[in-house]
Image (cartoon, rainbow, N blue to C red; front, side, top):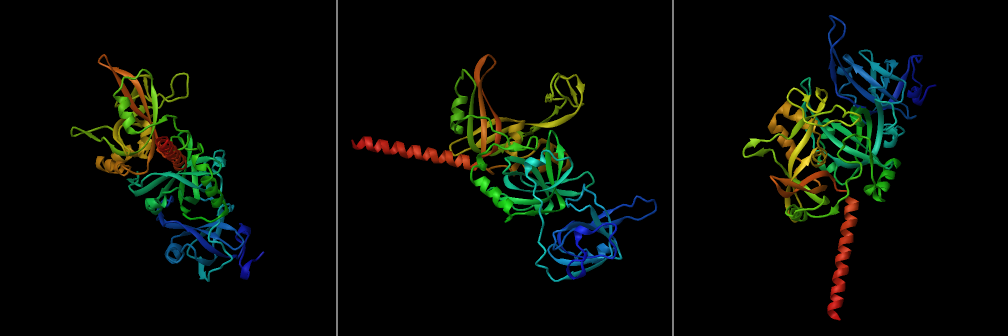
Length: 464
């Protein structure tokens, strides 16, 4: 059935549709890519894709090849409206498209694409928001649209891919009102956005996220043809904002991403300052104690007496006997684990000396893997790839980007130990994660109220 001015509804397109013309808005556009032909003797080609949306809400992916790239590569711009005809339809590849249409379009030298006046009846974008809790049960790989609050983010990282391409990525943690969180990787210009775009827990909508299994969890990656909306006004966004402001910011989140730099509940320790930690280190403790400190990462020790210090070690990931837990013991240069008595899967794990600072003092703390990930907002694998791909200086530069950034809630363990027969206190950082702003704000207000109450009582006693 024909739609506006004889145009055919996108939702009704199929292999049985002949002589169609569609009128649609370009909602997303991918980069032009080159490819090699699989047929011997044939030259390679080039292609780019666009997502199209019409006035009835129908969406479809269109790929333009070779001559069509030359004709329409510059002409097709996101947000503009066009009519399209003389294309062919094929079954959509769900691995590369988040759209619900069963088919996708291809255009070549015979394509007819004409720009038309803006059509106010066509939305600028169509989102099919999936709550994060539902992502947990989806068959992978899955393509989803997400709406959530940015609870944490990493600095952008530049690296060279295996095929020699220069890439930039940034990882963020997104949470929504299902009390779930997931790590999502942004690429290219989206990753290069200024840090201020991600600060202050903004709500964002991300269209076109491909979710895959990663370790023991799930992680998302924003596809090239997807979209990142930084100030969404849709109802789902308002719902997430309300959840976050009315208690969601202090709620325990279920992390879908294994080893994500937030999510899950932090170890409970008694509130303290770094000066309190220093005092504890100078005492001979009888039993273990745990403290919680709000501070910032100041320095990571990368050199000692002029010599470069190893920041990670290769650890055995084979399961311990009788359990599913990984061994995590250091392996030798050949990958052999003396504990498991075999060579198996290995991964890098952090082992850092970090200097943390608050308003009173600074302290150097041994910081093991999980805490180091939270302090640096970086995976050990990323650091290793950076060092091997771009060298030690590039790795240290990436680490310095974490210095004096967002405040951290650091959990410190103090336990009695001995060295050469003498008692001493062993101080280590066992957890680090971004400060839950709302929870910390309420705690500070409570402390201020208690100070004012004490001051009032003292003045009253003095007057009596």
